[in-house]
Image (cartoon, rainbow, N blue to C red; front, side, top):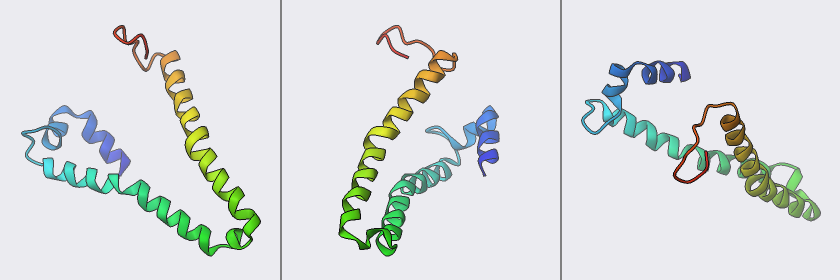
Length: 104
């Protein structure tokens, strides 16, 4: 499915069928966006449900460490990784320099 998305995005006339205010198939793009917006919350709920049914959360002493690990990964490690990816893209020349804000 990703290859189909790349093909649609790479061909301008095909892209104009789905994206834009006057696109005849813009309802398809809107539907896909709605499905995509719900993906991360559903995955988070699935992960939480699996953690509560597993043997990891049966001991009270491990509950705090699992919660702390999830908080550290979500609010510290993932943002740092995202900043690193953007900085690497800037250094490799994929992201242009913004003269207005002085950032990439």
